[in-house]
Image 1 (cartoon, rainbow, N blue to C red):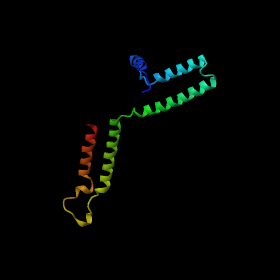
Image 2 (tube, rainbow, N blue to C red):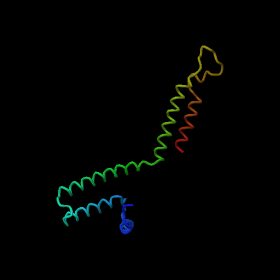
Image 3 (cartoon, one colour):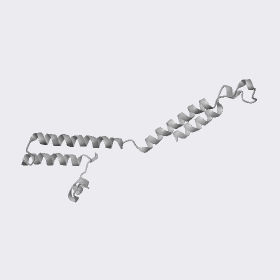
Image 4 (tube, rainbow, N blue to C red):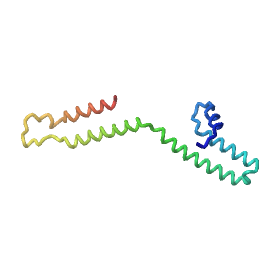
Length: 130
């Protein structure tokens, strides 16, 4: 990568309760300030521009790091929940009762309560809780 073995050892030996992704940015800022004091960076405006670009890059890395906080299991749970509710809604629309004018025997209860659709929903919703 972009680290020397010595820098990698310092990075690994650093004890911090927080994540250490910010350490190379601190090193860069310290080296840029040291270069300004030594005259390698001739103007403070150049140092400011350099630090602004570094901060912009750091904010992009932070934004990218923030996307990693949403774990796959959380997304999976949300997708499955949405799929179950969508399926149940489609069942409520698609499994309408039979036409009463036709006089089908044994389907009187389905006219008022969609029993099997509700039973299926309770099973699916119960499996979501597991």
